[in-house]
Length: 82
Image (cartoon, rainbow, N blue to C red; front, side):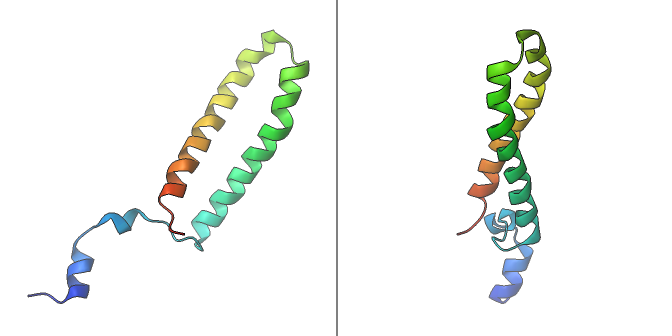
């Protein structure tokens, strides 16, 4: 019979998908989300108030990509221990 530590290394459990809360990857991702939030907080009100409707189609694709990145952020935060 294998010891507990050897068994844990051979089986890929749900912990293999967890991100460390103090890891470099999560710090970089938090910086990316900060930039996305700054973009959303500054550019979106400007576009809603001052941009013509003919230019909305160009911004639609950028905003949709940003929305998917925010959705990805939700999944990343679900896989980060407190």
